[in-house]
Image 1 (cartoon, helix red, strand yellow):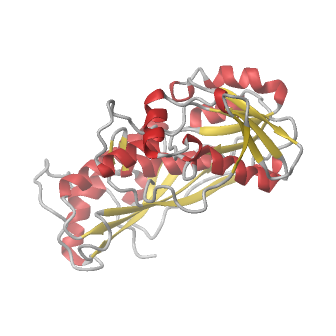
Image 2 (image 1 turned 180 degrees about the horizontal axis):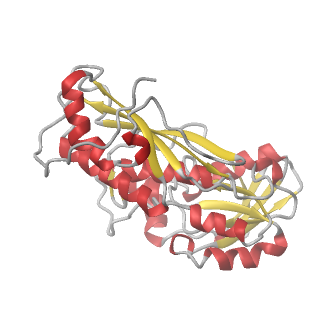
Image 3 (image 1 turned 30 degrees about the horizontal axis):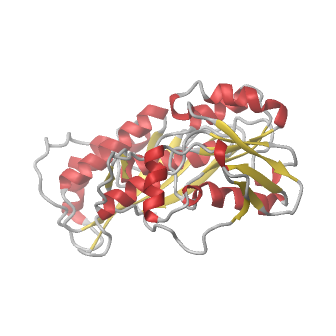
Length: 349
């Protein structure tokens, strides 16, 4: 890896406009000016001040580590943007491992011609999201590609943090009888991005649920709830998360659609567009599999946080047929829920 491109330097000018205008690869003085005026001031900490090839961290015990890339289109959408999405998405992946994110890296792929004000807005959003959860961005990289090659901006983030769960949390730990709990209403992110991209004029503005989930998820762990698995319901929504976990654990699941929280405006949008809310992406919701005896207390804990105030039990784990997820509709008729064979809506994260 080349010398990190993020470290504190001179303050950024107060929005002088302009666009990213760098040669392919983005080296030399032009890149340094971009870093000095836009990127470095947004992420100022001791690790970056070292201007070294990477960060040196003092971490004791087991850590969780993840990475993800973000290519959402458009870059800005109701309720969020690619910057907050990148930070929250990576923080959430760490939380689903029963860990608290402490450090992030970020790689920015900039398209030549990207408005500098857009870049400033994105990095400010990233900084705000990181500060809100107490995570530091400690290393990163910036590259520029030719105009028309990156749709404005792509972001890669990696994150790590210490595991706080005393017992393993993951799909293999799910067992027969577990309660299935969602942390709130589903489907808002996918509909918000689709509406912004396609210009749909719904009666109400549907905002993404993009948010950090570490506090409510880890509150379950710290309260001694028997948490067997946590999963944020991103691409493919609740359906894909449930099916993937059922297949991995070798169990079945029975969902009650009447208990699954879906906002009326989201439900109406799904009906107009021919979508199933169970398949629509979320960026601020997770599903928890906990011991049946802990379900009531788990819901009470989750409802103590604004981001998970709508938590509800939506079903239970059963023994067979292994790998199958069934959902009982409001009329009492059950159907088998499966993953989509293709991407319902590409570029939503």
